[in-house]
Image 1 (cartoon, helix red, strand yellow):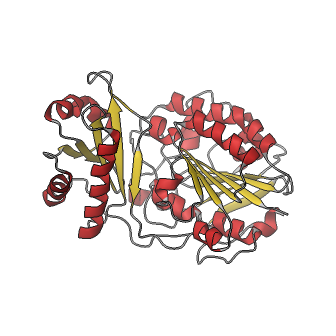
Image 2 (cartoon, helix red, strand yellow):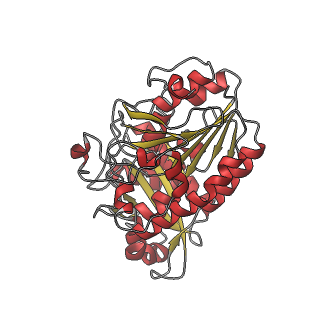
Length: 391
């Protein structure tokens, strides 16, 4: 019997290129193997659960008798960013991809945002790394009192501003206006991200954890909606609230990075009344994947792994824990963007079978299909349950 599900998304922790990776320029990407082969990675607790036993992950270091359930899942949505990844985990597959603006955003769009927000305009308007743009344009932004706007390989419009020039609420307001204009005018951009930063000059500018995401809301029914319709409660930890625009979420907890997110997750596993706890740990992606920081990514995985016994100890007898990801971001490749990869599915529960190989799943949505099946709730259009394989 399972009465509660905990999903922890290790943001960007992919386990190898998908068959269509060539269409995204991601041939050879393998976030897990890229870290493993270039560092002294030591994550014995995830290994014990079966992470290393996932099929064809490019690592020959299997656990003899895993205590968990393990497999990997392909992505059906056309994209490789956090919103569509989380939506697919929750059971919705977006058929029409969001639009990208690699040559910069249209002048009409930026002018409309500026006019409504009452600001002079934006600088930069390029595709590239946000941390690089802080060094290149951070001081100009402060002096001109014009925010930095940029994009990446994803369908995203990011707006960065110094907290002493535009307060966090002021930046949030600009981003909300941007979201409204995009939706009203049909620009088809998936995410608007507020990127507050602090510091005295280009050499010490740094982004803060006051980041906020404004997602397109044109996504269909998800597992979270089904939970709500069936009088079940959902707790969102980290940026889950933003990714689902608050829909289907009963309670939300903001986090300041992985360490804070892990501690809050442990506390809530011990004390929360919600039947679904949905967690995103963003530092793997934000601080390490996008910055090609292989060592940093490895150390972050090790810190999570050290806390995993405490997470498992906090589980109740009738809990299921699922560790997964939303896309890849291989720090060992030249690219600083997300990569089109399989995601791991590593599960554990005191009432579940051990050493179960789930193989290769067709879609991330198998996760939500399984949880809905376990809770005997109406199934969604997407995903195939693996309940019978694990219980």
